[in-house]
Amino acid sequence: MLSASVCATVFTASILLLETPLEEIKNILSSSDIPESYISVLFKSIGISCITHISSELCRDSGETAMGAAAELWGRGALIAISMPVVKGFIELVGSFM
Image (cartoon, rainbow, N blue to C red; front, side, top):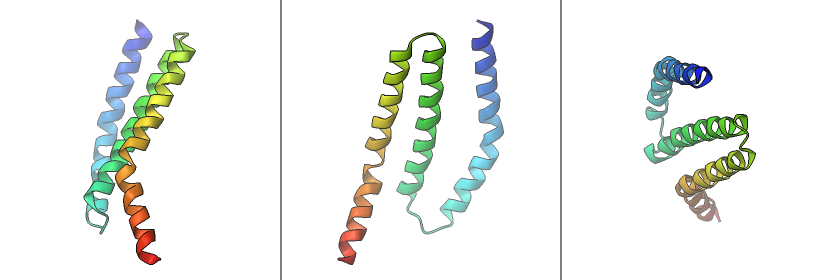
């Protein structure tokens, strides 16, 4: 129980500490010519990766290795699903050069 409360406290503190740098990065990316949809996919990917890693490690720490592997698999599938617009844009860009 103590380790769960420590994890929750560290997670909350991490989010609060990263709020300002992430906002600054978002402002920098917004001022570039990168479409907003690509920036959104980038931040969603970072979030999914962090949540997937934490979830799978928590599962492994509690002795549920198979569930940890399933969490990682779900995370990979989610990343593939949200990156489809970027892949589509890349394929269209390559097609316009040919």
